[in-house]
Length: 320
Ligand SMILES: Cc1ncc(C[n+]2csc(CCOP(=O)(O)OP(=O)(O)O)c2C)c(N)n1
Ligand SMILES: [Mg+2]
Image (tube, rainbow, N blue to C red):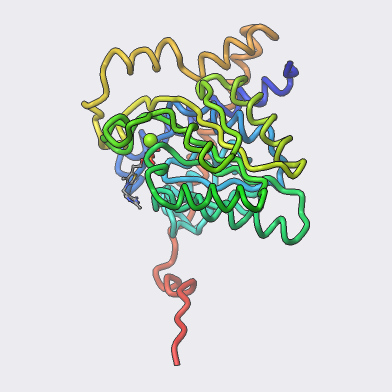
């Protein structure tokens, strides 16, 4: 049983991710945000359910669809919007953008534009923590497409033979860009692959925050007691195409309708919260989130552009 306070915190974060993505898509369409933008809409419960079981010093490793992971691990949305707008006050001083937000202060080792690129990094971070004798857990987020990369198998095996405290969170949204999972593998139950490495694995409903939270809690316990790693396959579905400019015409309308209107992570979490509190309290949470988001946008818009003369500052060149 989770407490009302925890449920409130998790709902607040889920709603904040939903609000962040929706607002930033608007900014993107207005031309204020450049480059690629892969929304996390429809997958919010995974990041929130997992991160609610982690401590601040625990690590996460994210993906190209990473805004939700950042927020769930405690990033400040004003600095995130600033980063998306390419402003000096952003997490990477506006140099990184959507796919390169990192926030080491909250244990977020960063998004990653390379599909599968974060998996080995997570294992490396866990190995480092283990060598230093730190009791940190690392949660690595990645989607179904990344499991087709060899690095997934290699990382899982290394984490297994070294008993590393890593939670491999597969966000199975059934697509790698426009390629449906069933065209890239004979067995769409991705958690089964862990058996080849003798790693504990489960498959759960990734849209139900309490289901995710409970499974992640068990995984964290196992990791902290030195019996890691664990694979959690979270079944989910994107609410739109691969990125903002992908109309997602290949996604069956009925299935999309189901995930948007009947099995939406925000609605599910809201219903749980309403079992513990009243409509007015939930509305107050939502209004506070919307205010926080508008303030974040105002902060980012008012922030200075980077100075073009500083662009070589972070470029390291070694020769001779
Ligand atoms: C190594 C690599 N190959 C290809 C790409 C191009 N690419 C970007 S996102 C993507 C699909 C990734 O699918 P998945 O891992 O399922 O993540 P999702 O988009 O579903 O979150 C591809 C192929 C890339 N960024 N990196
Ligand atoms: Mg996918």
